[in-house]
Image (cartoon, rainbow, N blue to C red; front, side, top):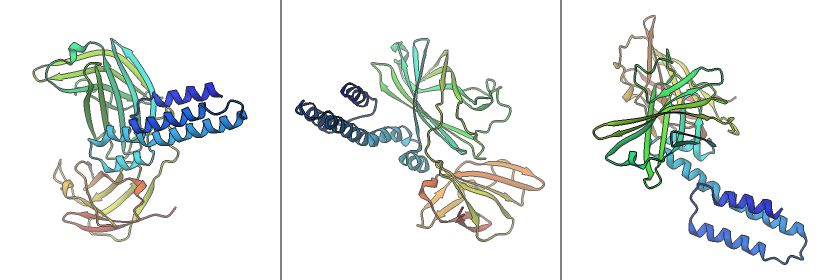
Amino acid sequence: MRYDFETELSKVLNSECTISDKVRTSIDNAYESIRKKNKRKKYFKNTIAAAMCLLMVCAILSNDVIASVIKSFLNFNDKGIETAINNGYINRTESETTNNDISIKLQSYFADSNKIGISFKIKIEDLSLLKGDIEKIYLSYSIIDKNGNYIGQSGYTEEENLNIKKSIISSIEDKFELLNLENGEIQYDTILESCDSSIPKIEEAVIKVDKVNILYKNNKTSIKGNWTLKLIQNNFEYVKEYNYSALNSIPNIDIVSIKAEPTSLNIIFNVNQVYENKEFPIDNLILIDENGNEYKTNICSMNTNDGKTTISTNFKISSYEEHKLLKLIIPNYGQIKLQKKIN
């Protein structure tokens, strides 16, 4: 038991999450106290003490782990995602592969019907590639499900995007950070969004990376390779989602669906008018919760058919917030009160 406990404790203490000196000292003192117990005491007492110590360590570190994951996505300024991760809606993985002296590790990811978030750590052995005025580092990759269907792609030109006839991804945002230039370590995080709420389940999917791109001030370098990372079986304990119904109607607007998911709230509605391109004032669409907090959106998908325009968009409200009443303000049309459905 002692060997197993020490091994597990070592794994935790040497994990990648940040541990403050104060916390580490407390852990070391607690464990040292256990080791100095009279060896003549019954074995099960030491076993219980060891187990309690490990539980204490895990409890302390769980917040650090969540904090480190949230930090990866803080720069995206997405309250819905942050709330979901705070409630444990995240998969941490150890999928890692190396090719052409570059290792790529899939650290964590989350996914629902509206958004996919992926956190990578990249390590480049050739440090000369990281010299100069770097403006951006990003990956060219595809997410492919177990049946070979493409869920999304990022980092490619239009000419290279030949594998997807109709993409379900409406927008992609990414960030990078030079963690340690001396070791060639880079953090790369990305969020893919579907305004149509059409992202399928991605269990058993893979991420295929074929280029690491470094954009300098005056030129660009792309290192080609083959990095395949597996998305582990979805271990979310519970996917919290529910629907809303409209309590009133307004002329020329028909609500199709309103569904709250962990990362965001998706709204789809029809307008009895044809809008071309960006004519609809999506930036002025407002959602208000029962506490008076306002939420806006800046992207949407639009489809016209039979003299109507279908508009789909996401608001940065997590289903974990469990709002019972909301109000949707559609500029030039009016307001619709929304109520959470009771299943």
